[in-house]
Image (tube, rainbow, N blue to C red):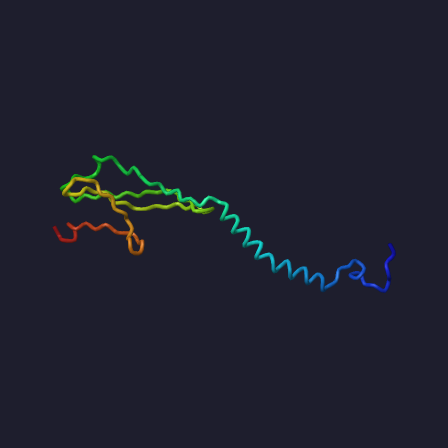
Length: 130
């Protein structure tokens, strides 16, 4: 295969600057689209279930203070939650006491229902000075 001495190397191989820039423009223009498509498929194909347990065994019934006392037990519960490809460790505070009228167990969340901020337990007997 003889080369024509009047043609440049790019013309001999069929590669031109315009062709290269066109290829580069198409490649760089489609790369974000292909990356976004990959992320959508990855998220869509992964399981999106939330493995939050429905029940926790906090303590034995006899360990909860009696119904006339103002005793409140505080527990920290921890679990792992999976949402799509992300696994998150969650810890929450739960307060457990007895209803003074019916002697039933009451469990209360340790976070505010308005903003989700943590609730701090206060002892009323110390605040009232008794």
